[in-house]
Image 1 (tube, helix red, strand yellow):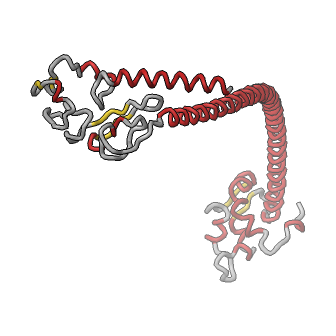
Image 2: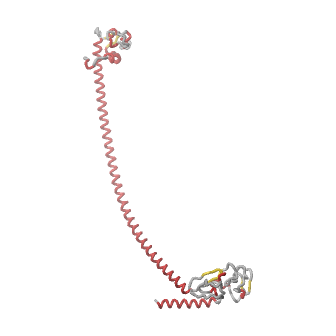
Length: 305
């Protein structure tokens, strides 16, 4: 393990030295991606195209270009950036105002190349610490991903089990629904049979009651006719098979105004305003009017015929 770390440190040191050599071929503060824009063999043209100056004016601590492109490694121009290569660690850009200000901002000390600051290049140490932290975070991420995958696997298994249970329950529900529908059909059939039986029974009862009622009515009609005939005989005092209104006058029960006697009109009232009435007419017409008066104060059960 120690041999691997030593080899890694050696390779990083070698890479750093080679990178330092390549850096002398471009001005301070210029990122590698813009190296070709700073060619010492040619005059320098400002990025905004405003002017062209001799290359020796680049990083001469005087701002010639309006966009500050001629001073990437000094603080001469405002609002410009200085690029720290930070070989072995993370490259970064800082405001050019921090260049040579006596404070080490770049871990490769490139921002203090012309100051008295005692800067130490610690990019390898910081880079290794950053990479170690990245590895640690990667391990945490991988462990988390593994746990997540395990949770996902367990969740999928639970979902599959729930789906199987759901399918089973759906089948059971379908069976229960079929049983319920079958029982409902049987119940409906039984209720229909019961309804028909009840209607038939009710019809029979109604017919029986109707017959009994008709029979009772007929019987009552016969009884009433017998009463009418008996009353007719009782009132036909001369036996001529006709009731004359004069035969009613002796009976005070026909005294409607209660003056103590039965007048001619009061007697004729019970004969439908006629003077006399035979049996048939009496039964159909006269008896209906007379019956309440005839039995006034008398018990029908005591009336013989």
